[in-house]
Image (cartoon, rainbow, N blue to C red; front, side, top):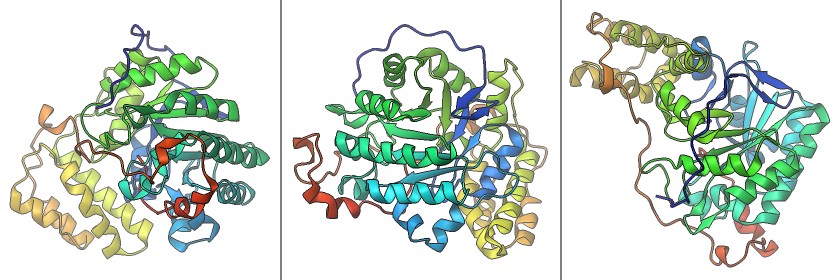
Length: 395
């Protein structure tokens, strides 16, 4: 885990729950983090039905967007009910980033753009992309400034999501946050882990507090990492003074978490504690939405399979039935299998809560040779850097 000096004393939680990102005012300071293969239109639609927030698309690469890759164009598509429309971009080249942002704003494809500098995946960082990129201060500044400038053509706010740094000895979050603020971003989100941490251990909320103190009230700071319940969000905001929270793994199999967050931030003790019957209804609705999204029943239901274990975590569902649900191929089959559940089973409590999704061990980051020798980007490495622009999830 990263070692960061202690945060200042615990802050007082902000009484207001609205969050302004440029011209966009959110009634709830909650953002759904992009997750590849998870946060498509179907899942975003389901989450919206439970609570307010900013729901971001799956991450897309700027190169694929400029080339109008069909899969990428599908990912950034929003249905009429999705307001505000939010897109996350991943890019390593200022010119391509500028072209992608210009395309989005001129074609009115989004109301908000987020830039991902948090991806810790080795095949990205070994090319200098993702959470390795802010180490090169000039390149980071150029990418963010270009994006903000192009987005300003239509008053579309740009935000930045990043990690603490490459590892405990090579942190970047304070100077990167300041650079992003000075470039004119509308908010900065910090995942309290380094690239080396991947998704291991406990997120370092002290770093979020330090970033908030460093930037003050000049730009909203959003905290990310280990929010698995509404109480976690309240705790993070109270301890760090951050202006909002970003939810990733915590909502996998729990779209109702956004309703819990809205209630908690408005001072209500009401929480969703779904019995097995309610979970089954959510699973089936999710399947229907996926079928609509893919415009193909088999593809939609097949995509649901990855969610099954998350939905039924802690519930009394036998191993055989779980395995059958994880291989479901049609809505009719899904309906039949869900009918076999014990619909009287209540919420199982702690067994259904806590960590979910990706967990990993810390690993030494994979970086380009000599990457840490200087904080200035060597243009001779541009061809290597371009290889980092792969269509994979950010972190």
